[in-house]
Length: 176
Picture 1: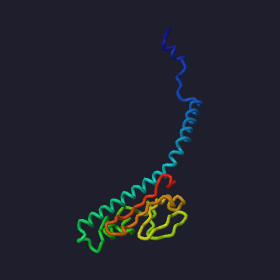
Picture 2: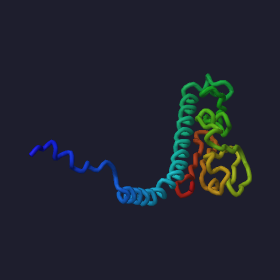
Picture 3: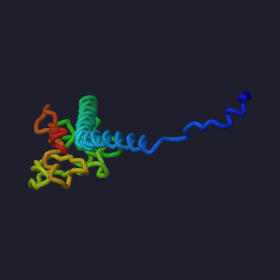
Picture 4: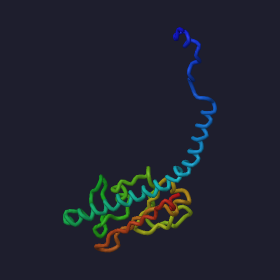
């Protein structure tokens, strides 16, 4: 027999997926999405807490640089004003004060954070502001009740050889 002639009568191979196979794949993807979605939705709180940890590091570095320059060349610093990152940072007891210039020298901007300076009353979304301090909150929670617990506070030095106090209240639970 002619084998070439026999192949002309064969059924062609399947060219695609059946409807049942497609439905099974869609159901499996749906189950995976339903279990993974809650995990990804909670990453925002972790990101906000990590962001405020980065703010703490930035402020600590700014304080250390200013303190080092003050100790190395205090006679050359004009009226306790130290130029840093394009702004003039005022020093109190040899450390940066709690002003907008200190925040700017640390790289904090209004595009990322809500910064409240000085003594202000507590509200539903902001803790009590202290004199000679500033409060940093991520913009994403600053106007929500989560802002009451998701913050970092910088308190300037109160005495000679006493560094500023940086309090980071941000945790994943606090920044929901």
